[in-house]
Image (cartoon, rainbow, N blue to C red):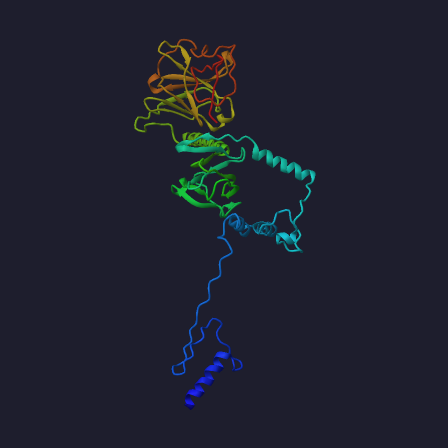
Length: 413
């Protein structure tokens, strides 16, 4: 009985809050009074409150503006867009837009006259007509330096900007919008024929930026535009300065080849065969300045070597006696100090002057000795009214008469 009385007192204290500092759970169910059984406690979970907030929508939470604000480097733009995303207008105060009170936005700087002229010149160049033309393999060709080239790209498409063969990139290309455009290098070919390429891919349509590419030859400044569907697969350039350089190089090679041939011709002996050389020639008359040093033939051509002093004097003309005993001027050419005659003759003469005052050195082949001559067959070879001009550098003399019908003696320089 005493134990039951104590249990009743404890139960009454717990249920009635008789003990200080103790409280029953708010939602606990009071235990049933049982004078004979143990006390049982049970906790009930609270009810969930009803949701008052609707599901977030893009209209209420403009995620695009928030992303653009995070991408922007301008604190004012970032704060403005952030404030706009919170439901404020761009025309509100700085505190409403979330801009710090101590922030001072940049003011528009007035341009000087020279600066305005420079901007106008640049704008004229950028908006000027720069008509592309069709190139090989679907390329669109722009003339380098004629204006601002424009490359049109589209999302999910690859645009290729091709440079000149053999050109090498210097550093990485610079693009105005490096977030929404992807550029990467590529190469076609090897060694001096390698063509550097810039692969361009936009992430979205409606973008407009510019690209700077520097190489070891030039700098490319290109405008990039993205469209939903239209795009240029391959863009290349035509180089007028390179074409001019090719022509100059070609002409330089031609001149060098001509000088080399002339030098080799002056250094190499014109004799074609040493086995059939014939030296039995006699030289009569003339002074030391016009007398040949030696005369030789190889059975096909006759070679008359003049003294070194003859290079600084008027050269005589060559006349040869024909089968009829008449003297006629013949074809010959001069290489260095050598007369080359494309025939064999028994008797001939180097004649300087005309008429009775003419000087001559007669050349007689061994096979032509002993033949008698009637009178002076060389007297009429050069008429008296004709004068012999100074030598000119012409490779071939046709019968000793030039196109103006005047006898000439020529010598290559």
